[in-house]
Amino acid sequence: MRRLPLFSIRALSLKRAFTCLLLIFSFMAQLGCDRQQAVSLAGVGVETSTTLFTFYETLAQHTNETREMEVMWVALSKEESARHDPCNPPEPQQASNANHREGNAIPATLSTAPRTYPPPRPARQRPRGPDFGPAHQKEMTDRVAALRSRASMARQLSNFLTVLKTYSESDPGAKVEEAANKLGGAVASLVPIPGIVSVIPLLSGFAGDLKRWQQHKNIKEQLRVVQAGLSKVREFYAKEAGAYTSILQDNSVSATMVLQELIKLELVTTWTVFKKLPEPYGMQWAEVADDPEKRDEFKCAFIKLIRLRNDRFMANAKSATDNLQDALNDFDSKITDFLNKKTVSWESTQAALGRAKFYLKEINNMRSEKESDE
Amino acid sequence: MSESLEAIDERYFYLKLHYNEMMGKCQTAAQEEVVDTQFTKSVKDHDDALNKIFKENAAAVVQLRNDLIANTGALKQQMENDNQIVTILNTLTAGGELAKDLLDT
Image (cartoon, rainbow over all chains, first blue to last red; front, side, top):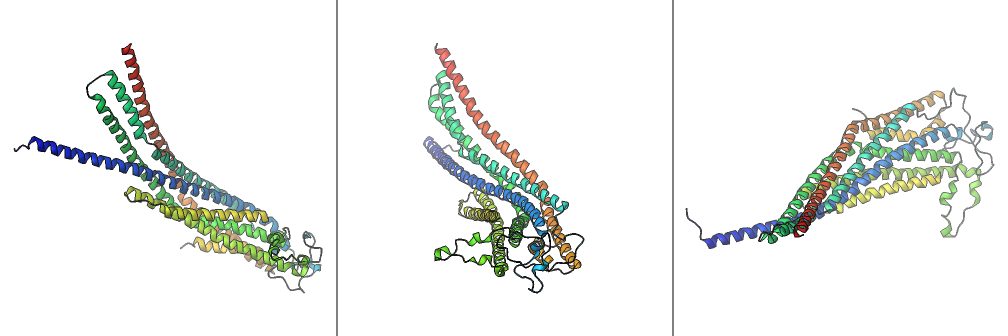
């Protein structure tokens, strides 16, 4: 076997050592870069899962409120005048003050002028009205429990991602390197072997790099765990999205029906909604609100207004559900990009998340408007 | 094939919004009965549809929550282990320094 000259062997070893060092250096630089990406990824994940938690909590809250509004609606619907349709009033000859039934008096919030009511109907065995019985009550309780269970799951996802973010932010490699360096110094001072001092930084650096590599491996493993969990979340979110929208819309419809009964029964002062409208034009409201001829027209206008708001709210409910679904899908694709060593950008996830948050805020704003109306 | 949630919702929301108006237009008890039966059925259909959807995934949601709790615990333990390595190295360093001090004296 032909032996290589000593010079060539040395040259070859130096070249190999240089290449190895270069590879290690670029690998370590990549690890540092990946760690930063992992921190950002976990951060976006925390935001997404927290929004998911808020969404489920909102749904549970809306379900409870819907139940309360249904109870109120049932109570209001016992009033005969709640069935009067101001947008389609009865013919004048059919309705007269003489038809006003005893016990169905309505508070005179606008004036004491005679009012028109639908003609009395024959006595019935029981007053007809919407009925939300015990079976429905149980369904609502179960629904709230199901939503709270999902909220709890979303909170756990957020907790996990928060811990992962903290783990990715930490640099255990640097800590280990520093501690190993100190230990090496202590050992060298105890056992004075020639040349040991020069090896210590190399060994502690190696210990630190090993820890960094282990951390990098762990982060990837944990992100795979996140992705597996996220895949399940996406799966049942897709199956349940229609139900989420339905719950939000049911809340809006329930609020609208209570408000329209309150308007019909004249239990709310509707004028305040538009009170300041003429002011910028230097106008003020005439005293037409007290005109009994106009009463039905006003009621009808306000009922149309709250139904218009209901339409807007229902569209927002659908948008909030859809955009949160987009954000979850997008976050999942970003984890895949990271694991496949692709460059990760957050714009699309942030945009979908921003839209979901916007619609959720709109929903809550409209609800507080309704509460103030009531 | 069962009716879609969208179709159930559409009927349920319409009847909920217009129930009193429809009842107000009824001239006979039979007509009221029809509206009332339709409304009660729409409430039940809506409840059943939502309940079915949530029940289908109930076990998966609980399982996922438990898995996430376990994984969070494991990750925290990993961080704790990292800290322990540093603590052990620091303890050994302190021991070495102490031994050196003892040898010197």
